[in-house]
Image 1: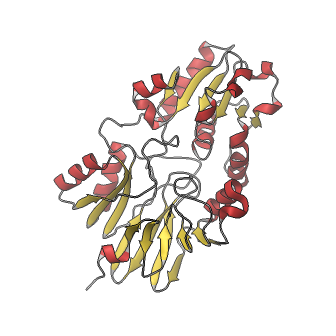
Image 2: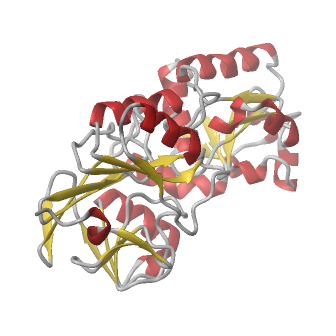
Image 3: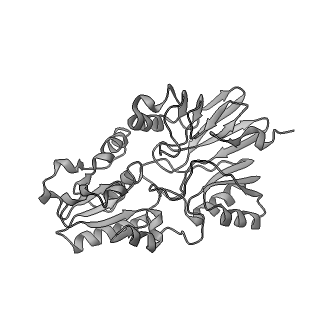
Length: 338
């Protein structure tokens, strides 16, 4: 008889725990052995004794945490499998940010896939999501409401460039999460034909350099500190969302405040943050991507975590898929990486 899924993986106060393998997935407290799905701070936390992740995620954790990235770092590239105390573990692409992975955990005839965060649309800065058949699929639910249907990324970038053309003397300051969103936005600008420098807030420089070191082509990218004020008139500056309203932005030339996030689908949120040009660009699956993914994988059971779980669970039940919420401490819905 296959091992029960709840015996193979279940939530604890420290996070999702696999007792047979004696490891946690994305634990939010320091543990002895952690498997990390990707480098965002709500999944990759410092202080674990042993960290296993893709090589790219380990590199990002070292940039962010230095010696705190982990006592021992073990790289597991996509597609390679590892036996941990009799539990087979492999990492497959999640399509969220560079190095992001799903954890595929198999033991006793049961397979569970922990998706971490993911999206299904093409992203030139990371490897695309790979669906894996499984007994239990653990999905995120950041944008799990039918109202969240994200438009084509290229159309959103076209709106940005149209605004730049309309206001040639103003700096367009784009809020974008420093890990993943900033680099993807730059890649989308290059794909749209923007060949001028893209100026970066200091918080995104090292992370962007890491992307470039991994062979991601981003063109002419420069730190804002290297610019004269005149250089920035008519230019595009990418900065963390927190920088949009602080004193740092005063150096810019009459900035047009923009924000790239799936949350910009909700106009009230844009108004609350004083965003003039909301750009609906997300690194998370929207409603259609979530439901398409679950239908494609057709898991024996769906566990839903960190986000709006009720609508997705209702939809899964209507499809005949058993589903339930999986409450995890330390996961929020309103992160700037949306």
